[in-house]
Image (cartoon, rainbow, N blue to C red; front, side):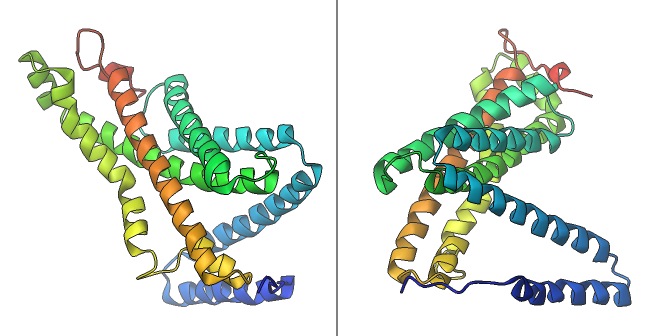
Amino acid sequence: MHSYISLSFVDLSIAALLLLVITSLSMVLSIGIGRMVLIAATRLVLQLLLVGFVLLKIFALHSIWFSLLIIALMMVAASREIIARLEPGFQWHWSLGISGSVTGIVTISISLLALNTALRPDPWYEAKYLIPLTGMILGNVMSSASLSLKGLLDAIQRDRLVIESRLAMGHSRKMVFTPFVRHAVTMGIMPLINQMSAAGIITLPGTMSGQILAGINPLEAAKYQILLLLLISGAGILAAIGVSFLAVLRLTDHRERLRLDRLSA
């Protein structure tokens, strides 16, 4: 049950032919997506092969410091990706502070919780457990934080006159911004809700499918998938809440006035 099917580069090239066919079809139909698909596929192949090679070396070293270095780089890249999706957003140092602090705290906390309770590898910082788990959690944290932050900033700028009027009438910051935070958090976690709702009935999630293909017992694979979905969903929800509240604090001052001047042009 624990044997797996090894894939050669020839096997991968056969799968790549599908995208070549789609690219050709795009040219025939004048859809114009061929170049975009080829670039994305090329990046996919190069990035994953590079990551696979690096992780192969990191796993062999059994060093917590190299593992932490990889995780730190991943978190910086995730924070940078969140900032890049905001237009306009806060000045770069505030954007980096809000996104970096939330993604870092949430990702590290949830990862340590899983490693020291459900998984319990010995040692807990074993790279083959720490890095993949952190990467899955971080990816969902980044997505939820980005969607929530963008939704919040867009809504506040769109309804700035209503917000300023209510604040001028003496309504508290909490009373005025709670509906906006609720909407932003809902927007940020909706992909996670959809993923949890569809898992098992409509689709087999990637981790479970991969483990089954690798020869793991389907019931054990389902348990791992449940654990991961609960972890990444919890992390994503916490991240959405965190960035939304920090953004509101940054966009208001001690006199509870709206400060859109703190957004970059």
